[in-house]
Length: 523
Ligand code: NAP
Image (cartoon, rainbow, N blue to C red; front, side, top):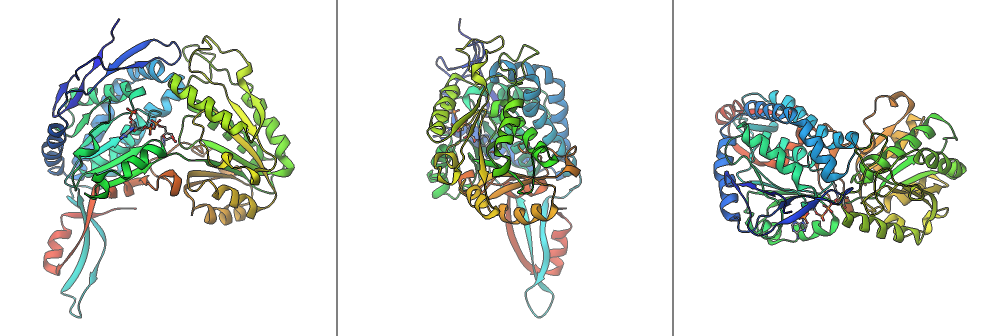
C-alpha cells in the first residue's frame, strides 16, 4: 500500500512533489509511514516568495509584535501535542519522555523567545553599544545598529531533533524578522512538516514567513543570495559541503554550522568512589548515554575519571545501564527506544566496531533481549567501553558514534586530562563534576577555549542543574573547531545571526531620532 505523500508548504501554498517520493519508516516495526518529495517544486519561486512577501511582512512588525506571534505559535503547538507525540513514537522510535525532550523542548524555547522578545518593545532595530565621538566636537558621533537581514533564513536540519531543531532556530529568526525555510532531515521529516502545517493552517504567521520543503536537498543552496543566511545542523561531512558551496564562498551568505562533537565529562581529581561528585557523574553519564538512545549532538562520548576510581566508575555506570530496558517505546516498561532508522543502526554498529579496535568492552546491553521488538528493529542497547591508557588511543578521541555508546578513560594529572579533552578538536559541551569550586573555576577557564558550553556541577546545584546534554535557550549552543564553529541561542544573542550590523556616523540630532526607533539588547 502506498502511503500519503506529504505536501511541502512553499511559495505560500501546499505543493505535493511529483513521483513516488521517499518513504519514512517506523524504526521499531519497520512499517512505512508517509512519503516525502519536492520533485517538480519551483525552488526559485519559493525562495523569492519568502524573501519578498514573508520578509516585508515580518519587518513591518515590531519586536513586540513578532514576540506575540511566537506566543501564538506556542498556543497552536500546545493544542496539537498529542499528535506530535504519536508521530515521534512512530517515526523516531522514542519513548514518551524522550519525545518530550524534542517536542516540549521546542515549545519551551519558543516560549522563552516570546517572553524575552516582548521586552524589546515597539523597536525596529537594535542599538549596538554606546555612541562614540568621532571628532573634537561631540556633534559628530558613530552609533552601531543592527537591522533585520533582508533575506531568508534557510535551515538544513539533522534527523535527531525534528521539533526542537526547527524551533530553536525559528524562534530567534522570526523574532528578528527573517522568514524561515526549513528543510528537515528526510528520515524524521514528518514531525517538522506537521508542526509547520498546524502553524500555517492556524493563520498565526504572515504569508511567506514559514515554509517547509521535505525530501532532497538538491538545489537549495543554489537559491541563496547575498542577504540570506543558512543555518545547518548535521554531520561534519555535510557541513563541509555547505561551507564550500559558492553561495557561501562567493556570495558571502552568512553560514552557521552545528556539526558533530566528541563531548567529555570530567570527574575532579579529588573525587572518591561514592562521593557526591562521583555519583553525580555516574547518573549523568547514564542519562546521556540512554536519552534519545544517545542520538544527541551534545551527548557524553568520553568520560574522564581519576585512575584510582576507574574500576569503581565502570562498575557503577554498568550497574545502572543494566537496568535500562530497551525496545518498543509503546511498551510502558521500556526506558530506551530505537535509533531513528536501520541506516543509523548500521552506522552505530560500524562506529562501535571501530572504537572496539582500541577499547575494551566494559558493558554490553545487547546481550539482553529487546522488549516487544524484533532483532531486526533499529534498537541498539547501551555499550560502555574503556581504555586504561587513553593517551595512546586515536579513534576514541576522533570518532563520534551517534548512539548509546561512551568510553571511560582514567587520567593521572589535570594537565594530562585537559590535553586529552583538547584532542576532541573543539566540542559542544564538557561537564565537570567537582566538590571544589576552585578546581571548577580553574578548569572552566581552560575548557572554555575548546567548548561552546561548560556544564559545571557540584552538590549545591545537583537538584537544580539542567543536564549535560540539554540545550537551554538562555545558554550558548555551538562549539569551535570540529563542532562546526557555530553559535546558536545564548538568549537574545541569537538575534545577531539574523541581523546586519552597520555603523551610522552623523550628527547627534540624526542619531537621536535613530535611537528612538531602536532598543539595546538586554544581555
Ligand atoms: P547529515 O547526514 O549531515 O544531514 C543533515 C542535513 O543535511 C539533512 O537535512 C540532510 O538531508 C542534509 N543534507 C545531506 N546532504 C546534503 C547536501 N549535499 N547539501 C545540503 N544538505 C544536505 O546529518 P544527520 O545524519 O541528519 O545528523 C547526524 C549528525 O548531526 C551527527 O553527527 C550529530 O552530531 C550532528 N548534530 C549536530 C548538532 C549540533 O547542534 N551541533 C545537533 C544535532 C545533530 P537528508 O536527510 O535528506 O539527507
